[in-house]
Length: 376
Ligand code: GLY
Image 1: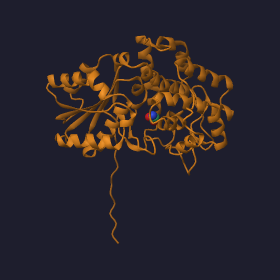
Image 2 (image 1 turned 135 degrees about the vertical axis):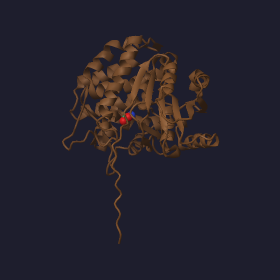
Image 3 (image 1 turned 90 degrees about the vertical axis):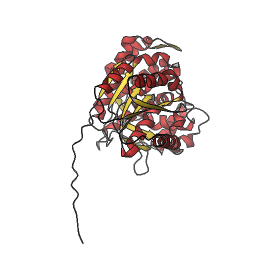
């Protein structure tokens, strides 16, 4: 027998910056001219059908006018498009247009775009550079930062994907002004989640300043408040990601509300927006935390109140049966030894770390079903 040792130790620096500002196309172009990405000959602008019309054509034109070789690839807007077929279609188009290792992907859009385009970047030619240009609060709060990329399958959401960090993230606050109210509200669910997991003061800030962002069905979008929540979302998320990029344990806290929320989202056939489902999931997990005597009734009610004021329905839709919802939760990536695990709150601003060191725990099915029934 012969043995050969493969020595492959690496120190990897995946650091990057996030630029928060207004109308950042010129900043992006300046960065590219200043060598943000080395050795790139071609840019693939990946976006969806909505963003293509709103911003894609303009960015494509600006890039070309500035001498960059660039093509745009778009897919039908919506989470339903975040699937393996669309990924393969775009990859084939990239290959047909001779994109290769000397290419860079610019993901322009919301969460579905950055998840899909980032996943393509991570596997195309075994990995090419990519940039996220975020056009929604939801992606600014979550998908465009942190390096998770994925597609959904009929069985489960986000289980096929990679950890792959972008070269830079641009959060364009001006784009929030053109968001439909449901989309903006959806981003607020992830923002409230961030406050719940790690920042009590930020939660209080949201309670006090919600009216500067949204009142009933009207977008207010006070510029300073927008900038502040964009920054806080990044700070809170990165405190977690910097310590546990690959979700060995701590990063699970970012999944608060997602075990139930993701299941509802998928069972609604993506008719509910991500944040709409996550808001229900957040309340569900707060409710379970209360039942297990972790958070107080008062704190649970504060979470409910903030989510209600934001305009969320917070109900498990009647077309989803208890059994369907329970079964769907078993496709969550935190399932261990066939058991569903939940991230739970100790108080507003603190996730419970359990005695075994884990930030998620097994919850009895009886409690899960009881909680679902209470949210009908
Ligand atoms: N969306 C959860 C995370 O980025 O880990």
